[in-house]
Amino acid sequence: MFRYLTAGESHGPQLTAIVEGIPSGLKISEADINVDLARRQGGYGRGGRMKIETDKVRILSGVRWGETMGSPITLVVENSDWVNWEERMSPYAEHRDDSIRVTRARPGHADLPGAMKYCQSDVRNILERSSARETAVRVAVGAVAKAYLARFGIAVTGCVLELGGVKAERPDLSVKALQEAIAASPVYTYDAKAELEMIAAIDRAKDAGDTLGGVVEVRVTGVPVGLGSHVQWDRRLDARLAAAVMSIQAFKGVEVGAGFETARLPGSQVHDEIFFDQQRVARGEKTGFYRNTNRAGGLEGGITNGEEIVICGAMKPIPTLYRPLQSVDILTKEPFEATVERSDCCAVPAASVVAEAVVAIEIASAFMDKFGGDSVAETARNYSSYIEYLREF
Ligand SMILES: Cc1cc2nc3c(=O)[nH]c(=O)nc-3n(C[C@H](O)[C@H](O)[C@H](O)COP(=O)(O)O)c2cc1C
Ligand SMILES: C=C(O[C@@H]1CC(C(=O)O)=C[C@@H](OP(=O)(O)O)[C@H]1O)C(=O)O
Image 1 (spheres, rainbow, N blue to C red):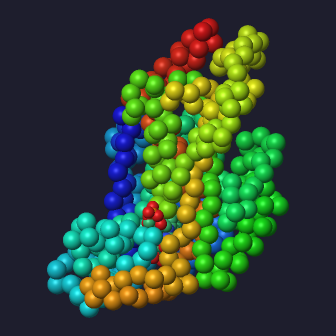
Image 2: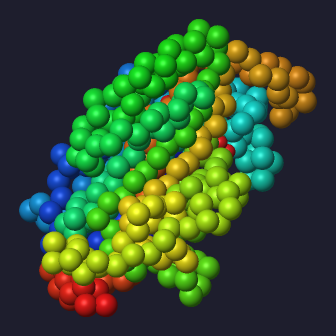
């Protein structure tokens, strides 16, 4: 079983993840993971905090001489900003200072419900953990999952599909060419025309003291038929993917394949007809069955059907605005206008990297459920015998 937990506050010393279930023999390096950490920090529209941080991972367990050992992997990302917060974030009672309590709850954050639920008079005790700073270490876990999936020819690609109402059009390019276009784009999209409009939209929002949301898209190629299952609700891979994407801070909607559009169309325009061509196997495909459309987004009955997985997530605009929003002080009950000293204006590009990570984690988990193996070599044997069987099905 593949599972992970994260710990750490936004302005504490570090973020930590413990990852269990990755088999032995997977090649992984800090440098591989740092590529994704840098991508997550980038993207047009981010604020002052990203100028302070240069995220680098440290692998503290589970990897020896560049290969996993099958034991739990500990990943750490330090917060450079911590030096400015040591006393304010100290674990020691003698550092308590009630005069610096945050009592003004910001709309759109966990501040008010969190303070009420956890019986806190200092909103900092909530916001430190609800912050999307936590996504740094989730991206590190995702990089390990991606390395595992790459070993089996599976690639996971996240990008920005829509930002501030500007929608990208997908060009007809190979996965590699799409990845290159996304990597070269300041807003992590593959549509150069939309990119300019997205940047202009962010500039306008920033000038107006406002923030923007958008839609991110994650595609997974090379997935075999048969990950996930229809037999139990919590084994349906579409449901697991939706939960993973929805778990990202500020995500408010998820679509698999044609998603909400399927509700508006007749069945004849929604379902992907099935065809068979034995020659495909001879050409190296995993099965002779194929579709000419992929409105299902690669999942039927919670099971992968061999087509590309396509999942989108909607991110709301950043809730902390330079233009003040009305709120109430939790101690005095006096109204105030929530203002801010630093915040992202738009984090949709960064969030596309997070979405890529959480999708990779879920696909890797489903892959391990299906093929097992305590070493990557054992998983590879199980996988290739299954692919052989599929070719004859
Ligand atoms: C990559 C990323 C960066 C974010 N940056 C900020 C930010 O700078 N300021 C802010 O107020 N919210 C930011 N958020 C969003 C909040 O963390 C999120 O809206 C908040 O925790 C409330 O949770 P909810 O929106 O899921 O209900 C960011 C989210 C992500 C995914
Ligand atoms: C630190 C990150 O994102 C932060 C997420 C965040 C929030 O409220 O979610 C608020 C901002 O942090 P701060 O309050 O320190 O300015 C963002 O910069 C990061 O992505 O690494």
